[in-house]
Image (cartoon, rainbow, N blue to C red):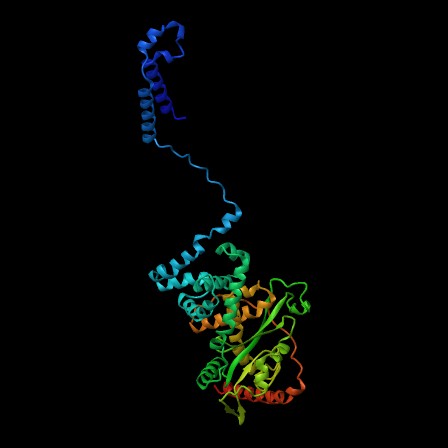
Length: 442
């Protein structure tokens, strides 16, 4: 009890004893006669009133003070329930709406790339194109916040557990949002940003770009495949052994065709990593459209009397066809014209090799894909769409992901491909002879 309060009560008691000594325990009732008591005794009512008034006055002037409670250490569940301030919706909104335009553009975009893999203007383009679809899904999070969260996962390869802790959301919700955004990128934005160059203007631009790189006329693309490593694969997966690629890890096979600017104009993810390049190509929609003549490139040139339509180039793991030219040899053991052609062709192929290196360098989730097997293809295609957006916007190119050296044998020619093979063989030799003559005359 407060010491001043005890002192006040003691003083009141002494005052009471002074005014009415008959109540004092120190005096015996036999020492005082009744007449003396009657003479000295006073009424208790005034004293009681005085006592109550004094106590109330004291309490009014000395409000009780609360002892500070010791901060209890938060439980793991309560700590997880509180969103980290730097990744909360409020922090994201403040950065994206209040502070972003106060920054210098290079600093702003560098910060955004470090967080989400692309600059702020490209990010806003992605959000604006996806926002109508995300709004229809009635997601409880803002569209731009959801897109940013998914991009951070794709750019840094973050796991569900890491994102759930960072954004204070349940892992199942992170998985749902990732699936929705990557599906929208792979379906709604694919037709706009991944297109076969069939228009005259784009076809001329592409073939001229390749000709500047290789000195070969009418090349319109370079094709290659790459295994995308799976973080894990369920033991119950049907034909699980087929997912083991030639480098020894479980994967799915990505096939892309790129132009001279390292922009993909065709993407296919259709086979387990254990498939060879030729088989995957022959199973693709692109192959079926090319061999059936469904794709018509309205541009042809004449080389030594040979009618040369636009074609793509690949390495020795692809079949030689009229629309797909491959090297004469693996280690430049052909004739001088053939070796010159092979060297020029590999310069063209470098565009697609670097495009794949940029793809895996920008979107690190493709270095160790930590999504379910069912969602792997759409996640890979979504990253290809984002890669094209970055290339079109001329985003700074990150350090290239280095692919292992590839080797293999030329595939056998199928019965239905023989006419295309013989035409391709003739076309390749004509281009080699023409190139060698032009190089020799310089």
